[in-house]
Image (cartoon, rainbow, N blue to C red; front, side):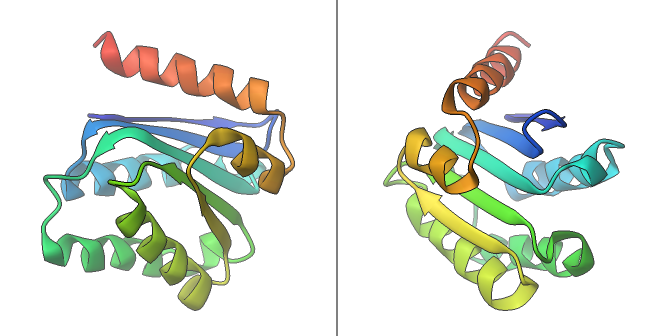
Length: 143
């Protein structure tokens, strides 16, 4: 799976790395795995690093299907802070997800082009998050 994540109780974040081409099924499995993690309840937000992702496998209707994944878990994301860090290629999908989470779920969300402003917005240490991202990306690339 080109997605790896960690429910990090130190930062209070679910940190996820999307690397390579990500399909809807992989996105679906990722969300289900995160929500089943026993440390999920100790987190208050999430940071999704999509800077090395491509979304070429996503079809037009997949965006709506992704939104429905969040809709079924409304109580679990209401009040959470959700950040997406992406490239110009991933920004359109990221912006739609951001709008969707803000409008429908009661989560505070933002999209950024780099890690530093995302970490400032979340109030977490950039170096700590960068270390987690590097470890997750290395795990994805070595399996």
